Amino acid sequence: MRLLVTGGSGFLGGFVLAEAARRGHDCVALARSPSAARRVAARGAVPLEGDLDDDAALTGVFASARCDALVNLASLGFGHAPAIAAAAVGAGLGRAVFVSTTAVTTALPARSKAVRLAAEATVRSSGLAWTILRPTMIYGAPGDRNMCRLLALLIRARRGLPGVGLPVVLPVPGGGRSLQQPVHVADVAGALLTAVERAHAAGSCYDIAGPEPLTFTELLRASAAAVDCPVRLLPVPLTPVIALTRGYERVSRRPRIRAEQWQRLTEDKSFPVDAARRDLAFAPRPFADGISEEAAALGLGPSRVPSPRLSVNGLP
Image (tube, rainbow, N blue to C red; front, side):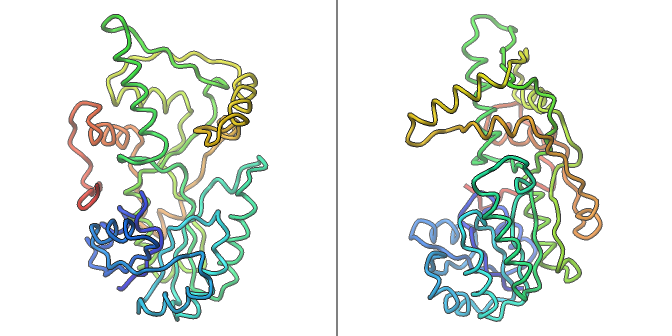
């Protein structure tokens, strides 16, 4: 199958392009800059110059790719969905898989929630043979936006201890009782490609998560174990942490963390994956295995034999 991929130069895109090549698909990847074109070419895709902000040109760009299906990895949180869906229809790309996020289920007034839900509604009414995948927090390799930071923090804290064997003390805002269900990036890529390949997945929306929910405390302990870092978890009240973070947001041009992220820690993020198991042969790896693989890939933990499902060929 010949696939048109948006977002191929990103973190998930690298795994999708590698898995697509392994399965024998040809990929054309939209690239808005020379650096993005170089990245997707290095990952085995044919770069296609185009910009999701250029609505008028997008149909022509999509049509020039001469593809069978669209794999949209580009975020649905920036308002591009109407243009992407219209361009896919205009280019005759009847089959399309879109990546959304389980974050649309939050009860918080998140800024991008309404945009993402509107994007999903646009996809559903587009006339495409669509499938929507909603991953939870994606982790598993250098470049993820969450676990890489945590693992590096644990290593720095361990190195700063005055004695061998002393535990790193980690403050845990909110007590760490809320549920998390991270999903490995390679497992997400596999589900995406299977969704494209299976026509019966059209017209369905799937939650894509790890095999079982963990408490935030269990997630922290598994991460610490992956880098051989003894930890002592110290529950702290969430309210002052949120207040301090809001103050930080007001004075920082590019805050690295926002109050909303702390608030999300109090929400249970637990999602059934039965439908994805049934329709997409989805078999996500346990978090303890995936985080150990990530630690090994980062050179932060003991070397371990990676899962045969993890493929990093062609990735930076």
